[in-house]
Length: 308
Ligand SMILES: Nc1ncnc2c1ncn2[C@@H]1O[C@H](COP(=O)(O)OP(=O)(O)OP(=O)(O)O)[C@@H](O)[C@H]1O
Image 1 (cartoon, protein in one colour):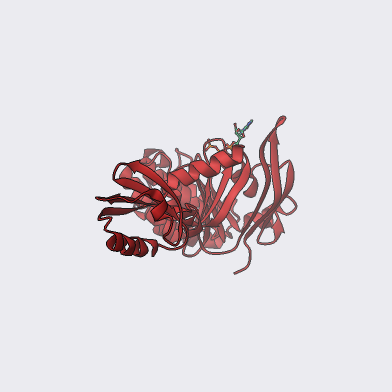
Image 2 (image 1 turned 120 degrees about the vertical axis):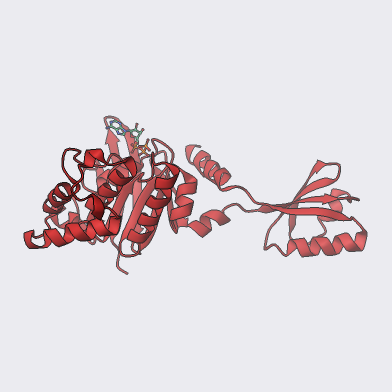
């Protein structure tokens, strides 16, 4: 699939301080791509520029090959945007608001009714057509925000912290809807909550201090926790040097009298070699657990690297 979003050395300064520096992105596939970063990392600034609501200080944004600064109307036909505070009008009904959103997105007059119906259907708000937006719960108001972002069937849908502030039930529903939308659109979604990105995204771009510090698949992010380690409890533990004879062991640590942590490279077949050695030397293993770094640790590790 062709590239839908490309940014080239995107940088932005508020006054004299840089909020983002040299953001280079290229996104081309369907699915949910996560923009992960702590508060103030630069997510909203990046998204606002990508969607053409903020003019960058330096660099370029291409939407479906069109430079958004040079041809904003053309580029914006391919983008839907749900900003951090959804731009809903509380004194309009759902239908009135979506009709207005379709006009703003230059949906041809004769197609507006159908576009409104389809967006409502997709977002599960058809039964609230004549309800004032202001009288909807937070979760449904968010759905109206999502409906306006897809009303013109853009290839790229950008959502800034779409699950922020939702209660647990609304969260589950919102995730379902986002996954569903990502089957026919590319969704770029930001969050400062790692577990949220983990649940929703197959690709993750991590931004910290205004710079990209990681960009790869969620699997690669999970695998970042190398080397893995085993926590092993033995009835009759050997001196640590004996454990270093096992192929793949890189480091050992005495955790307590009968417990050691064994760091290793390579796959988890290390545990088979360890058990074989234990049987041979009668170390009498009582417990082995894989002790992988938690995702949150990786997040902290990457964040602190970026600040050094
Ligand atoms: N209008 C503004 N004027 C001055 N500085 C700003 C403005 N908007 C953002 N900033 C600063 O730019 C940096 C990046 O902010 P941005 O809102 O893009 O981050 P974020 O990752 O979206 O954070 P959050 O999740 O808290 O919104 C921060 O240091 C912020 O204080």
